[in-house]
Image (cartoon, rainbow, N blue to C red; front, top):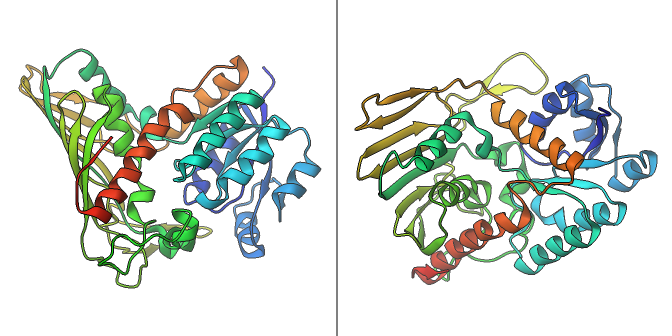
Length: 358
């Protein structure tokens, strides 16, 4: 079958580099172009050695490649709406970064643009395709834990701001400059904006929506940041499951330079872990490890075959299928809207010091 002609729209987001290999290796795509937002970024891209032209504007890229069928929208959060408009008017399918926007009026316009143009829009929440997470989902679906009472989940990383400064600029990350609260000199747009995954996965695993949310920020461990880097969230789902979530930038930037164009290694630079309590036992999972533990089951360890990039490959394969078959992706704008509303509720709770009911 003919491959889908795809481009990367901007090279701003920290996930962009993961798409280089994915698009280059997947026979379902013909990677035809890239747009960059500065000469420096363009020069860095060419160091990777891919035979793909890199343009200095989105408009130039679309003008030179009128046959583009789909894009990976890898720009900063504040640019997404204008790029949604560009793609919708050209009939170009979109794989959007994990935060389309925090402005719910903009979000509703994005939904309208997708619906009226007939394009496919999938949101980049790759953890749905992670083998450990899919095993957890299977155990949930089989009622292996019985009635679930509580979920403790972490999605913690180092701060990406050292490499991608826009993620520390409130206007670019959150979309505008909003103080965390009246007693705080920091602004919305930090670690919370970077970590929607556990909010999304708790909805998917429990098949329930948020009832209420209470969030607090701690003192930053990086005093120079204008945005939050330490945050804890607790609350309850509508089906009664209590949760405690940690979406912080609490890993420190311990860099080890290795050969390669811009490559650096960070020891245990990120983690997505779950501890789930149910009437039949406890489930423990490191989503970047090989095992799901179900304490209380006859066979209490389920080994999962996991290699880095598995979740990216699965996500892109679904995108190909949805574009070819005109199907709605599992993680679409309508699904993801509830997650964004919950994250906005976290900021509202930080501002008021009170739980927020959804």
